[in-house]
Amino acid sequence: MSKRLRRMPCLAAALLAGFVAYGPAVEAQTDLLRQAIVENDGWAAGTDGGAKAAEANIYVVTNRAELVQALQAGGNPSLPKIIQVKGVVNLSADDAGKELTEKDYADPAYDVDAYRKAYAPSVWNVKLTDKKRPERELTGPLEEARKRSADMQKARMVIKITSNTTLIGIGTDAKIIKGSLVIGEGTENVIIRNITFEDAFDYFPTWDPGDSWKVDTSYPGCQESFVDAATGPQLCPGGRWNSDYDNISISGGKRVWIDHCTFTDGDRPDKLFPPVYPFPHNMVEQKVQHHDGQVDITNGADLVTLTYNHFQGHDKTSLIGGSDSRVEDAGKLNVTYRANWFDNAGQRLPRVRFGKVHSYNNYVSGVAAVPLKGVTDLREKHELALKNMGDAPIFRSAFGVGKESAIYSEANVFDIQNGDIADVVTVQGGTRFFDQGSVVNGAPADFASLLNKDPKKPISDDLGWKPSLYGKPPIPAAEVPAYVKANAGAGKL
Image 1 (spheres, rainbow, N blue to C red):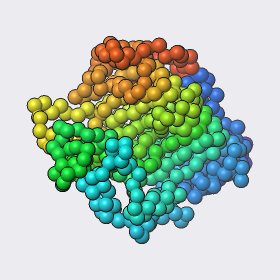
Image 2 (image 1 turned 90 degrees about the horizontal axis):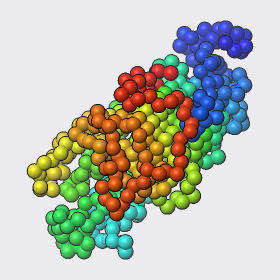
Image 3 (image 1 turned 45 degrees about the horizontal axis):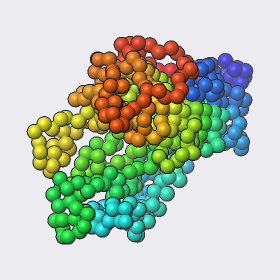
């Protein structure tokens, strides 16, 4: 127990009894508060967060306003600080603690129904750009009103974490909900532990008409040139809804350790928001997406380790590298995933560009799409796919092998209902992938043979690097599911 606690016995007793006082304050488990990452535990080795914090810069926070104040550490945001989260901190709340919702953020000129009608494929897609696809940058008063609404929400629910910070939950029920934490460029040495992150909900997602759009003449009436309502580009498949907020966005930050956290969409999963446009724009992927990533690592971020986290029921779970065109990311985006549970996740576990990623002893459980054998009618396929959607996102892939990525997979376990080894790895512009000791649906995984079926597009297992930073040695794949399920997530620190 610290000297400050001994001098303040009433405060210590209050904390242990569940009463909360805003800092400076110290919680009883000082060993956990100042705990740095285990030596050599992945790419974030050496990260100690707020371990060197003076007792005056140890805080307990219970709401958004207190969190924002604590991050400034007495006017110097770079000072080491330890911030303990007690109970539920709602980031979509005003300074008095009142929750803010869509109507509080919406611009007076924004109308979601009018927005959907104005940019519907039947209206917007009748004319293609010089790039032979619908214009992806929406224009007009409704899009401008959407942007103003989104800016209002972003200004409130996005919180920037500062350097030399440990953010840790007290007990088993600490939550940060309805908001997004950003570890941005210039921010270093951050630890986040023992917190459930829930429902980073975007009230104003944007429709991107050109996302995944293509001329596919198997769709009735689909062609490049507009003729009439029954023939033209407006009848070609494609377009996606996209949202802005990750539970945690490491956007340029460095030396970050995320440990024993849980990530969930809460009571508003995207399955509640099905496609709004008719065939052919009613694919499962065209749901109205209100959540982006759970932990995304982009824009030159580097030296990150994720251990013992539980990612629940989410589609686009963890992206590393935001664009093929960001060549300046080469040599960065180096990340370790160890002993995490990707539980009914859809994809991006992770999807990687440029980075050297070590993934070992993780457990992935999911449900792939039900095969529609014998169904040839495209309209029927769309309708059946929507009908067959379960409670969890459809599993599409675990590893996304993107541009200049080098993924080293080791003793991971994949249990994929309706799927097989071909569903685990997707090549998305990359040329290298290595695995040893992993298991898919109970069988040893031979990814090398699978990925080299096409001799014209070989995938090399020579990554040009080999992991040396092992916080714990790998355990055999047979032990991984029970071990990870027993240890991953908030409340198990």
